[in-house]
Length: 281
Image (cartoon, rainbow, N blue to C red; front, side, top):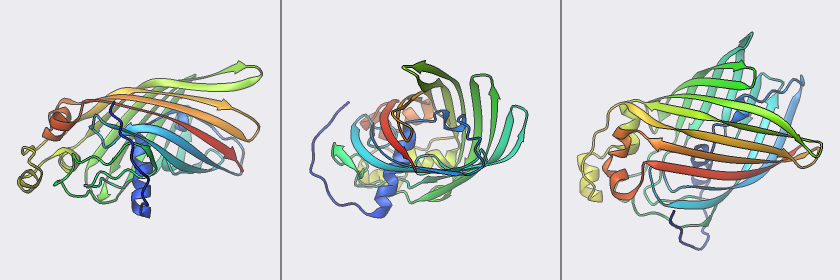
């Protein structure tokens, strides 16, 4: 990992949202496996710190700070700055199905990553242009079997990208007791598939971009975006305060790793880790 220290600069609201999108690299954790049986709304606010790549595919990392807010209603609805929106429409036996919405703010040509406390803007993206904000509506299917939580979701980009994304993850989720406190951990594999429209937006280099950036033309096809491993650890500090630790490792698929952007400036091996402190209201 490569770090450089820089001074803090003011950021726009749009670029602040980009930070939250980048943090989705951290974790596809047991959030979908956690259950709230209370038939009422619950809320939490928090703050976190993470180390993430400057952009997906980069080999330089940034340390950033970020806010979090989560609202849930029973086991039906959840909304989170880090995880987006989810509505559990159908539940029968071990199966759940529903709708979801995530946000993808895209990417900034100047390499901005708001909330940064260590690192500096990357110049790798110069000449490639900005990728605008996108909504990613979709559907999900979840299957719970004992301590194993498996989730499949498919989303369609609307806005800055029009690609399709499919994700599958399985986590082993368990709770153990330490000094009378219930600590939950989850760990398991994850795979992501994307179509050519998504890959061309984030990893393709057209003729005009090649001339501006001096990076060779590249036209990726549909592919496995990545396969990897996620882990999480939730530790209660008090009745209202909890701490969550996250780790993610992913290996980019061949069509992505062969992008001239990744080959020249990045790495197919992507890691992210973070910690979040939450306060229940």
